[in-house]
Length: 423
Image: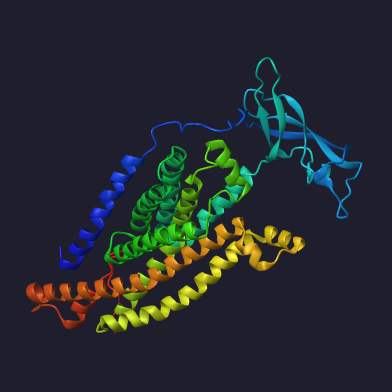
């Protein structure tokens, strides 16, 4: 083991051990306690529409017209549904569809999901509309995504998909239950994110100095993101209860008067930065390795400057990606604000938008700072490793290896297993 590898191992082994200790200490112990308002006991059986007809219902406040008046009657849809799963399979029930769903949208055979409220104290069970059943088309779409990824990226794409599955397993088995159990959200987010990055990066890209460099840059970016998120949440008085989902969660967990939901916001900031940080750090590390392959005699300073030229383009495109992704997701809310004619500055300073703005800006700062840091580490590692290997070649086989062959050996890519061509 040369000095470069030993240094990287010395940096990462303590982090890996701390992650394992954190997982063991924070691992949820069982069913999370329920406090505050308890949710009704419900089941979600699937069903198939037998028939759907439109009727006339009394208008409600939700049907208010633009002039402020409430219509006396509005069209509504009642659907007869045959339950196709659970203990009530084969039973036919009538449910009211949402106001936005009309009878033509419910032809015979449409698959839907129902809510079954279990009756208590002799009361009968009650069925209600929940949603359309979308598992089948979404499953086909997911399968198509997997096929395309494997077809284009080969085994590396397959390993990336396996890593994605592991990441969601960590979130589902550790992060979410630990948060509901009352563990410190920011610590849970950092421990879970670090564990995910160790698995995902090495699984997708292999064990190599290049991957280890990207991992170091990613972990540094996560640390910056966590610190900035904590400062931003306190400075902007973010409570995590600015949305309907946050308020409902606060009620169901009894956290309306505490700061636990702020911690959930911070955990979300850390998790949100994983994908983009992984992308930029592995790209920067690979760029520096390829630059070194193209010019074996480039100095660390040259590699850093050239790598940062690539990194600056990546920063610009990533900033657009984050901004447009959020804009697309929030488009209905933005349109509603246009209807309300709320001033733009006041809009972005409101609780719901402030959380998203803070999350986006904090994550962006973390990934922008991760780019020069990863580039600097990569330039240091690739040149140091090359010098060490070249020295080993002189000491053991220098008399029998030509200069060109030795350069190829120095530039061997541990992840690919083949040397890069040299000029």
